[in-house]
Amino acid sequence: MSSMQAAQPAYGRHAENGRAAARPTVIYVMGAGHSGSSILGVALGNCAGVFYAGEVDEWLLKGGAGRWAGAERTRFWEAVRERMGTHADGLIGDSVNRLVERSSALLRLDRRGERRAILARYRPLTEELFAAIADVAQADCVVDTSHFPLRARELQGMRGIGLYLVFLVRDPQAVIESNVRPISRHEVAERRAKVLSSNVALWLTQLLSVYVFLRQPRARRIFLSHEEFLADPAGALRAILDGAGSPAELPDLTALRSGVPLEGNRLLAAETIALRAPGRPIARWSRLTQWMQRPWQLVYGALRPVARDTVHEGSAHGEGASAGER
Figure 1 (tube, helix red, strand yellow):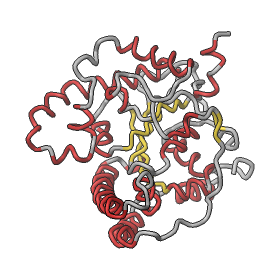
Figure 2: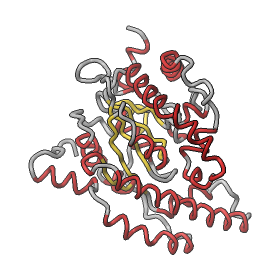
Figure 3: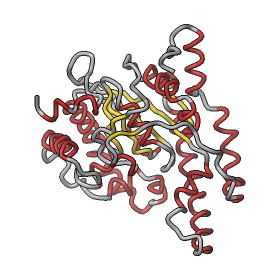
């Protein structure tokens, strides 16, 4: 048995028919950075027939090479590059990320012509990339946690994939704290400036995310908070898998294999990851964040479907996760 074959359970590679689907399903996790998309992706990737690819937008940004080392990971993404051949020549670099995928791309009005030229190649190339990933992983479903809402908008128009959209949010205090953490507490002015700029960026990301979420067909989308995922991971995973049309059983949530994702949170450097119950409540340390992000709590309360509602509805009809799975 080759090392690639031996590692199959870490990928969640075993599709029902033993081969990748011609038109793979893509579960795209959308929302702000630092919202917990990596751990959600890892959990989904431990399900049969589901492959967690990480932040796939980084494939063009870094030429198909990720941050995390490892022989198995290297072999996997080299195989993807071999299938792609030279089709991505001319798009490798940061142009796609800056002009198409990042929320700030909307502000680059002077680059619209360049953006149109990129999109003509970007869309078919992205479809081909997902097909190559699914083929190498022998999976029916690929999880992409790139999280940019404008990337999700482009995926919505691609006929070569079946898109299922997960809008993932997290307590804004935790998101802003993650952005500010690298700055020393002694750098008061710099921290205040970072809090303000991070809140403005979060506003733009949430505005675009809600717009893209509402454009997605109701049956092919779900709204989920990171805190609710940690409180009931089995229920949230079951809701996502059911929505994406996957009959996969839930994995052992105490021993998740990180797999071979291209890019993501530093937790992916570990070989095995365990889901933990939510810790102590997030401190309301930033009044500015509390004030600026309060309107979004009202918006989120109106979004449907919500993962918890989907799980409860399925359970009422005998379709949800069993007590043993919870």
